[in-house]
Length: 502
Image 1 (cartoon, rainbow, N blue to C red):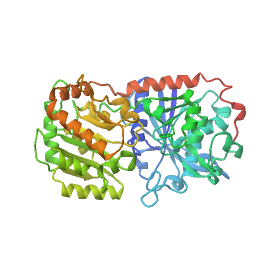
Image 2 (image 1 turned 30 degrees about the vertical axis):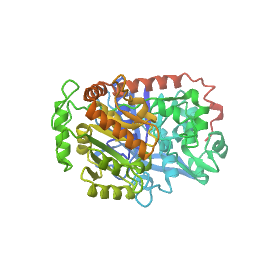
Image 3 (image 1 turned 90 degrees about the horizontal axis):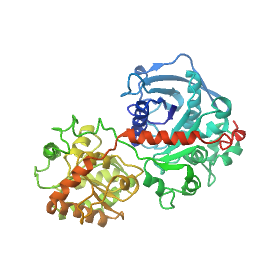
Image 4 (image 1 turned 90 degrees about the vertical axis):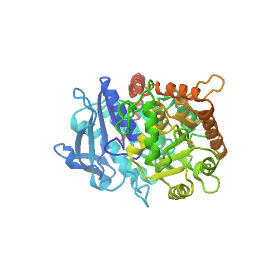
């Protein structure tokens, strides 16, 4: 199939979170299966034009009040195979994308003109196809910035030049929806009747993701359990009714991980490679981790690692909250060491700095380091991930393949990838809790700590079981192919071409 990926992020060009990793990894995995993949991105200020190839001529994009002109650049996605490379196309418009930040900047985390910026981008996706003379079988949109691609396909583009094309929309995080004043609908260049028929209306506001969920031929999110959770009021962020309505077209496909980059058998960031058959290298990684963070080198003291964004979604308030967080009690009451790498909310960064100064067995680095993230995954005995909600999660999968047992909340993709330790059978791959409370986190860390000291044989069995799991993108890519094939079986009557309007 010919598959176009429309996204606001893709590594290594633009990244704020897991969306960027998923789009690039899925594209490469699909190409390895023999499909023709092209990715379309905005050309942000941070993406160096000198490293791209400019296509001849300018490209006009229909917008409110006329047409906006842009340039188009191209590059090959790193990691592409020579025989079937993934080509990336960049829509270059200085007014919309020639600025610092993807969605916003410090002090203005959400640019006021984001609806106009990404409406332009979504319409430009189709213009890129025309410019390069390429007709996709599938338009695959990712999250709210690209959610208007299915809308434009149904209400205008499909009847004109893409009669056989279908659309898929992936929810990477339902908490971000692109909700703005409905006056911004003007920038879509669609009729106001479409505002209601396509599902934009949201309590007298304009919801870009909701419109995509109404109109895409097939929908999915990034884990089976999160697909179930998002159809409930507790986790649906007010769109659970829409997702229940579309439940027949909605599924969960677990993200994979880059098993070339995250592989303890060939990781350049750790002291010595290791595998499920020989874990001696993991002990050396633990020593290196303790030394790197300035902790006493104690082989028999469990190390608990965290690599996280310091935001509410990740449950950091329950761990580091100044009045009630569990980190202080864990480090005072238990013979453990805790290391953290992350950045985010200023209050949390400040509290973590204070705790690391006051607690001898807690050390943290504010920021991000690729080397440190790999060292934490390899050198820790446990990995703490107390997410409020987690669409898929990657770090728990990294932890498993590195023989580091996750301590996680029973939610989203964490529940799909971690098997809770069963004390009767000795089987499992991690430790889970249900309620997001400081006491639940404290008790589960205590459970893991007790298992470490009293049931080492079970602990080693769990490590090996985790390392043997398959989280490669090939498996996920095959499920996406099934999703595309299901979308292509939708009849032309179901696509409602007679309803299409500019």
